[in-house]
Length: 157
Figure 1 (cartoon, rainbow, N blue to C red):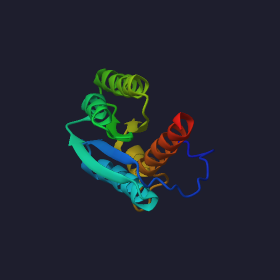
Figure 2 (cartoon, rainbow, N blue to C red):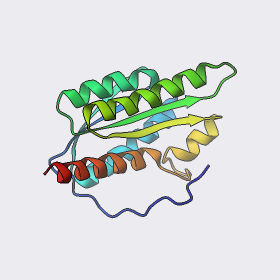
Figure 3 (cartoon, rainbow, N blue to C red):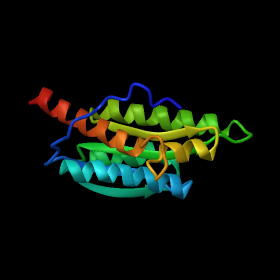
Figure 4 (tube, rainbow, N blue to C red):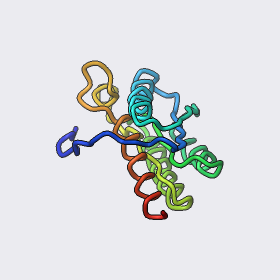
């Protein structure tokens, strides 16, 4: 796990931004931790947000695209994919990553990437922002999405 090099961020004023958190339902404890981290950042920033739950990480791109096309300024995509004994892990991880990248490029709007691709559940618990976790990937994804949305707003001016 590499938390090394994580930037120290200042507070964000994201009042006026509309954000949608799109989160998978697999691995409830980990996904709920990711959501809580994202919600903490969004609440502190003043952004207006809603939460939409989807079945799993494979469904994140299509729902993220719909949210952005419906007027959201940014999406935070949160999911948990744990490696198993079949190639399924690689297929779902690749589809979610490639799909979310395409959504961001096609819409010109940010997608905060909080999809954890893990070898085991412990790695997810260490990254979920729970008590005892070493990292808070939900908060990091929200921070990245907000900062990118504000940068794009300033560039488009």
